[in-house]
Length: 317
Image (cartoon, rainbow, N blue to C red; front, top):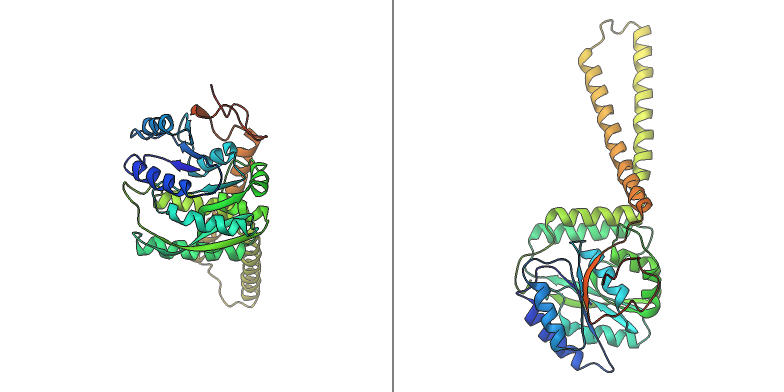
């Protein structure tokens, strides 16, 4: 399955290469596109492809719900014994698919692609991505592979376990690490984008990283607790020193500057810790609302959901 958003320029070449790979696979296969409410004509082109190829299925969202939710929708409606997730910009080469399938046939339930090289990306993005993956692996509550994105093959057993997780804030690659099963990586060379502009800006990448940290680690909360304890201890020591110095007559005129600095510093620390707690509370608020993960405007080649449960109202007629 392939989530797409404004990929009209890449779509013909993407479909040609994916179709060629599918022709070489054993057994039957399907190609499921999820259009995340594109506005460049991608949706209309997908409908044309579906009319010309019965293997193609198309889901179009009622609005833009984001990349991770688009992946979720595709996995909800995929029908195969194994499902491959890949992006639509051709940075996930379709020619790697047979290597993923080969490892699945060896008995692995999750086969993820590991990026050995990343062409066409700025030094800052490559460096921050490498740091983030290593930080997340160190502090996360589950073992997450390094330099692995959403490009992967998932067996039906692992997929059913994934589909039972209906949390609103989704970090798909972390969720597949959480479900367990037998997993293995396949290295590949990640080329630069075929056409168009990257959809993950620095701000969106930062938000995805925050979702991963908050969803799979309570380290920020532990950091807040440790920080609060350290600053409370420091304040106690400073207060004790001030009392002793006052009794000893070391100074008689209190300094308003030092008081202002200390109060401002501690106030800033308190606001930072409250903001950190607020991130977790906002996640709780989103879960309590229990809205559907996505709303589908139209579907082509799909008659009904094949596996339960999914969100109510997910498939609109």
